Image 1 (cartoon, rainbow, N blue to C red):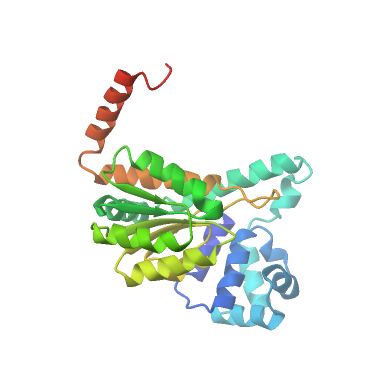
Image 2: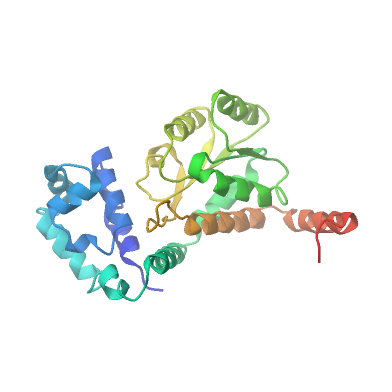
Length: 280
Protein backbone atom coordinates (compact mmCIF):
# COMPACT_ATOMS: atom_id res chain seq x y z
CA UNK A 1 0.00 0.00 0.00
CA UNK A 2 1.41 3.38 -1.00
CA UNK A 3 1.88 6.02 1.66
CA UNK A 4 -0.42 8.99 1.85
CA UNK A 5 0.87 12.59 2.03
CA UNK A 6 0.43 12.73 5.82
CA UNK A 7 2.54 9.59 6.31
CA UNK A 8 5.28 11.03 4.10
CA UNK A 9 5.24 14.23 6.13
CA UNK A 10 5.57 12.25 9.35
CA UNK A 11 8.71 10.59 7.95
CA UNK A 12 10.10 13.98 6.95
CA UNK A 13 9.87 15.19 10.55
CA UNK A 14 11.29 12.03 12.16
CA UNK A 15 14.72 12.39 13.73
CA UNK A 16 14.53 16.17 14.14
CA UNK A 17 14.47 17.86 17.54
CA UNK A 18 11.69 20.40 17.14
CA UNK A 19 10.74 23.24 19.45
CA UNK A 20 7.14 23.43 20.72
CA UNK A 21 6.39 26.07 18.05
CA UNK A 22 7.91 23.86 15.36
CA UNK A 23 5.91 20.86 16.58
CA UNK A 24 2.81 23.01 16.25
CA UNK A 25 3.69 23.77 12.63
CA UNK A 26 4.42 20.10 11.96
CA UNK A 27 1.10 19.07 13.52
CA UNK A 28 -0.73 21.61 11.36
CA UNK A 29 1.03 20.35 8.24
CA UNK A 30 0.13 16.73 8.95
CA UNK A 31 -3.53 17.61 9.47
CA UNK A 32 -3.62 19.47 6.16
CA UNK A 33 -1.09 17.34 4.31
CA UNK A 34 -2.82 17.47 0.92
CA UNK A 35 -3.01 21.28 0.87
CA UNK A 36 0.30 22.24 2.48
CA UNK A 37 2.41 22.03 -0.71
CA UNK A 38 0.26 24.81 -2.17
CA UNK A 39 0.46 27.23 0.78
CA UNK A 40 2.76 30.21 1.09
CA UNK A 41 4.79 30.65 4.26
CA UNK A 42 2.39 33.40 5.34
CA UNK A 43 -0.64 31.16 4.78
CA UNK A 44 0.97 28.28 6.68
CA UNK A 45 1.89 30.64 9.53
CA UNK A 46 -1.72 31.85 9.76
CA UNK A 47 -3.03 28.29 9.65
CA UNK A 48 -0.70 27.18 12.45
CA UNK A 49 -1.11 30.36 14.49
CA UNK A 50 2.60 31.23 14.44
CA UNK A 51 4.74 33.96 12.89
CA UNK A 52 6.06 33.79 9.33
CA UNK A 53 9.71 33.78 10.53
CA UNK A 54 8.85 30.72 12.64
CA UNK A 55 7.85 28.89 9.46
CA UNK A 56 11.17 29.85 7.85
CA UNK A 57 13.14 28.66 10.89
CA UNK A 58 11.13 25.44 10.85
CA UNK A 59 12.12 24.75 7.23
CA UNK A 60 15.77 25.38 8.07
CA UNK A 61 15.53 23.04 11.07
CA UNK A 62 14.45 20.31 8.66
CA UNK A 63 17.57 20.87 6.55
CA UNK A 64 16.19 23.09 3.79
CA UNK A 65 17.55 26.47 2.69
CA UNK A 66 14.20 28.04 3.47
CA UNK A 67 10.46 27.53 3.12
CA UNK A 68 10.44 27.70 -0.72
CA UNK A 69 12.84 24.75 -0.82
CA UNK A 70 10.67 22.82 1.63
CA UNK A 71 7.56 23.55 -0.45
CA UNK A 72 9.29 22.40 -3.64
CA UNK A 73 10.19 19.15 -1.90
CA UNK A 74 6.60 18.67 -0.73
CA UNK A 75 5.27 19.24 -4.24
CA UNK A 76 7.61 16.58 -5.58
CA UNK A 77 6.32 13.95 -3.16
CA UNK A 78 2.66 15.08 -2.96
CA UNK A 79 -0.19 14.22 -5.32
CA UNK A 80 -0.45 16.51 -8.34
CA UNK A 81 -3.72 18.09 -7.30
CA UNK A 82 -5.22 19.25 -4.03
CA UNK A 83 -7.58 16.87 -2.31
CA UNK A 84 -10.32 19.49 -2.27
CA UNK A 85 -10.18 20.27 -5.99
CA UNK A 86 -10.07 16.60 -6.93
CA UNK A 87 -13.44 15.77 -5.41
CA UNK A 88 -14.77 18.82 -3.60
CA UNK A 89 -17.31 19.55 -6.34
CA UNK A 90 -18.50 15.94 -6.40
CA UNK A 91 -19.52 15.65 -2.74
CA UNK A 92 -21.60 17.71 -0.33
CA UNK A 93 -20.14 18.72 3.03
CA UNK A 94 -21.38 15.58 4.81
CA UNK A 95 -19.93 13.29 2.17
CA UNK A 96 -16.67 15.22 2.30
CA UNK A 97 -16.48 14.55 6.04
CA UNK A 98 -16.95 10.82 5.39
CA UNK A 99 -14.34 10.88 2.62
CA UNK A 100 -11.96 12.64 5.01
CA UNK A 101 -12.37 9.80 7.49
CA UNK A 102 -11.76 7.26 4.75
CA UNK A 103 -8.49 9.06 4.00
CA UNK A 104 -7.63 8.95 7.72
CA UNK A 105 -8.24 5.21 7.79
CA UNK A 106 -6.03 4.74 4.74
CA UNK A 107 -3.30 6.71 6.51
CA UNK A 108 -3.67 4.50 9.57
CA UNK A 109 -3.52 1.35 7.42
CA UNK A 110 -0.29 2.59 5.83
CA UNK A 111 1.22 3.28 9.26
CA UNK A 112 0.31 -0.23 10.44
CA UNK A 113 2.43 -1.75 7.66
CA UNK A 114 5.04 -1.87 10.42
CA UNK A 115 3.25 -3.77 13.20
CA UNK A 116 6.13 -3.55 15.69
CA UNK A 117 4.89 -0.49 17.66
CA UNK A 118 1.42 -1.97 18.11
CA UNK A 119 2.83 -5.36 19.10
CA UNK A 120 5.13 -3.73 21.64
CA UNK A 121 2.20 -1.75 23.02
CA UNK A 122 0.16 -4.95 23.29
CA UNK A 123 2.91 -6.61 25.34
CA UNK A 124 3.22 -3.61 27.66
CA UNK A 125 -0.54 -3.43 28.26
CA UNK A 126 -0.91 -7.17 28.79
CA UNK A 127 1.87 -7.21 31.37
CA UNK A 128 0.36 -4.42 33.48
CA UNK A 129 -1.98 -5.68 36.21
CA UNK A 130 -3.92 -3.58 36.89
CA UNK A 131 -4.12 -1.64 33.62
CA UNK A 132 -5.28 1.99 33.94
CA UNK A 133 -6.91 3.40 30.77
CA UNK A 134 -7.08 7.19 30.63
CA UNK A 135 -9.26 9.36 28.41
CA UNK A 136 -10.79 12.71 29.34
CA UNK A 137 -13.32 14.92 27.58
CA UNK A 138 -13.31 14.20 23.82
CA UNK A 139 -11.25 11.04 24.36
CA UNK A 140 -13.44 9.59 27.09
CA UNK A 141 -15.54 7.51 24.70
CA UNK A 142 -12.40 5.98 23.16
CA UNK A 143 -11.08 5.02 26.60
CA UNK A 144 -14.45 3.69 27.71
CA UNK A 145 -14.84 1.52 24.61
CA UNK A 146 -11.35 0.07 24.98
CA UNK A 147 -11.85 -0.62 28.69
CA UNK A 148 -15.21 -2.32 28.10
CA UNK A 149 -13.78 -4.89 25.71
CA UNK A 150 -10.39 -5.16 27.43
CA UNK A 151 -12.11 -6.27 30.65
CA UNK A 152 -13.25 -9.42 28.84
CA UNK A 153 -9.65 -10.63 28.38
CA UNK A 154 -7.54 -8.68 30.92
CA UNK A 155 -7.81 -9.50 34.64
CA UNK A 156 -7.92 -5.92 35.95
CA UNK A 157 -8.75 -2.89 33.77
CA UNK A 158 -9.35 0.46 35.46
CA UNK A 159 -11.09 3.16 33.44
CA UNK A 160 -10.03 6.74 34.19
CA UNK A 161 -12.49 8.94 32.30
CA UNK A 162 -13.13 11.66 34.87
CA UNK A 163 -10.64 14.32 35.91
CA UNK A 164 -10.39 16.20 39.16
CA UNK A 165 -8.70 15.52 42.46
CA UNK A 166 -9.56 11.81 42.42
CA UNK A 167 -7.64 11.09 39.21
CA UNK A 168 -4.20 11.18 40.83
CA UNK A 169 -5.49 9.06 43.72
CA UNK A 170 -6.73 6.38 41.33
CA UNK A 171 -3.42 6.26 39.49
CA UNK A 172 -1.59 6.00 42.80
CA UNK A 173 -3.87 3.10 43.76
CA UNK A 174 -3.12 1.35 40.47
CA UNK A 175 0.61 1.75 41.12
CA UNK A 176 0.28 0.32 44.63
CA UNK A 177 -1.48 -2.73 43.22
CA UNK A 178 1.26 -3.39 40.66
CA UNK A 179 0.47 -1.37 37.53
CA UNK A 180 3.45 -0.98 35.21
CA UNK A 181 1.84 0.74 32.20
CA UNK A 182 -0.91 3.22 31.42
CA UNK A 183 -2.87 3.52 28.17
CA UNK A 184 -3.95 7.03 27.26
CA UNK A 185 -6.31 8.22 24.54
CA UNK A 186 -5.57 11.89 23.82
CA UNK A 187 -7.63 13.83 21.28
CA UNK A 188 -8.03 17.56 20.56
CA UNK A 189 -8.62 19.81 22.20
CA UNK A 190 -6.03 18.40 24.58
CA UNK A 191 -6.90 19.00 28.25
CA UNK A 192 -4.04 20.37 30.30
CA UNK A 193 -4.95 17.84 32.99
CA UNK A 194 -4.11 14.93 30.67
CA UNK A 195 -0.63 16.33 29.94
CA UNK A 196 0.01 16.87 33.65
CA UNK A 197 -1.30 13.39 34.52
CA UNK A 198 1.00 11.70 32.01
CA UNK A 199 3.96 13.68 33.31
CA UNK A 200 3.23 12.57 36.89
CA UNK A 201 2.58 8.98 35.81
CA UNK A 202 5.94 8.66 34.09
CA UNK A 203 7.74 10.16 37.07
CA UNK A 204 6.02 7.57 39.25
CA UNK A 205 7.36 4.77 37.06
CA UNK A 206 4.50 3.94 34.68
CA UNK A 207 5.25 3.29 31.02
CA UNK A 208 2.83 5.49 29.04
CA UNK A 209 1.33 4.18 25.80
CA UNK A 210 -0.65 6.87 23.99
CA UNK A 211 -3.09 6.99 21.09
CA UNK A 212 -3.13 10.59 19.87
CA UNK A 213 -4.22 12.49 16.79
CA UNK A 214 -0.62 13.31 15.86
CA UNK A 215 2.94 12.43 16.75
CA UNK A 216 3.32 16.15 17.55
CA UNK A 217 0.39 16.37 19.98
CA UNK A 218 1.12 18.02 23.38
CA UNK A 219 1.16 14.59 25.05
CA UNK A 220 4.00 13.32 22.83
CA UNK A 221 6.88 14.30 25.09
CA UNK A 222 5.19 12.66 28.07
CA UNK A 223 4.63 9.32 26.28
CA UNK A 224 7.00 6.37 26.06
CA UNK A 225 5.23 4.95 23.02
CA UNK A 226 2.88 7.11 20.97
CA UNK A 227 0.92 5.71 18.03
CA UNK A 228 -0.85 8.40 15.99
CA UNK A 229 -4.27 8.13 14.37
CA UNK A 230 -5.64 11.28 12.67
CA UNK A 231 -9.01 12.81 13.46
CA UNK A 232 -11.45 14.29 10.97
CA UNK A 233 -11.97 18.04 11.02
CA UNK A 234 -14.61 18.45 8.31
CA UNK A 235 -17.54 18.94 10.70
CA UNK A 236 -18.18 21.33 13.59
CA UNK A 237 -16.88 18.66 15.98
CA UNK A 238 -13.91 16.40 15.25
CA UNK A 239 -14.57 12.80 14.22
CA UNK A 240 -12.38 10.00 15.54
CA UNK A 241 -12.91 6.83 13.50
CA UNK A 242 -9.18 6.17 13.12
CA UNK A 243 -8.37 6.49 16.87
CA UNK A 244 -11.30 4.19 17.66
CA UNK A 245 -10.09 1.57 15.19
CA UNK A 246 -6.52 1.89 16.46
CA UNK A 247 -7.87 1.21 19.95
CA UNK A 248 -9.39 -2.06 18.69
CA UNK A 249 -6.09 -2.95 17.00
CA UNK A 250 -4.27 -2.40 20.31
CA UNK A 251 -6.90 -4.54 22.00
CA UNK A 252 -6.16 -7.34 19.53
CA UNK A 253 -2.42 -7.02 20.14
CA UNK A 254 -2.96 -7.08 23.90
CA UNK A 255 -5.16 -10.17 23.65
CA UNK A 256 -2.49 -11.89 21.56
CA UNK A 257 -0.03 -11.26 24.40
CA UNK A 258 -2.35 -12.65 27.10
CA UNK A 259 -2.01 -16.44 27.34
CA UNK A 260 -5.51 -16.95 28.79
CA UNK A 261 -7.40 -14.43 26.65
CA UNK A 262 -9.30 -17.06 24.66
CA UNK A 263 -10.25 -18.97 27.80
CA UNK A 264 -11.58 -15.78 29.38
CA UNK A 265 -13.67 -15.03 26.28
CA UNK A 266 -15.12 -18.53 26.23
CA UNK A 267 -15.94 -18.30 29.94
CA UNK A 268 -17.70 -14.99 29.40
CA UNK A 269 -19.71 -16.40 26.50
CA UNK A 270 -20.79 -19.38 28.60
CA UNK A 271 -21.90 -17.18 31.49
CA UNK A 272 -23.67 -14.78 29.14
CA UNK A 273 -25.59 -17.66 27.55
CA UNK A 274 -26.56 -19.04 30.96
CA UNK A 275 -27.92 -15.64 31.97
CA UNK A 276 -29.69 -15.04 28.66
CA UNK A 277 -27.74 -11.81 28.48
CA UNK A 278 -28.09 -11.20 24.75
CA UNK A 279 -30.99 -11.50 22.34
CA UNK A 280 -30.02 -13.88 19.55
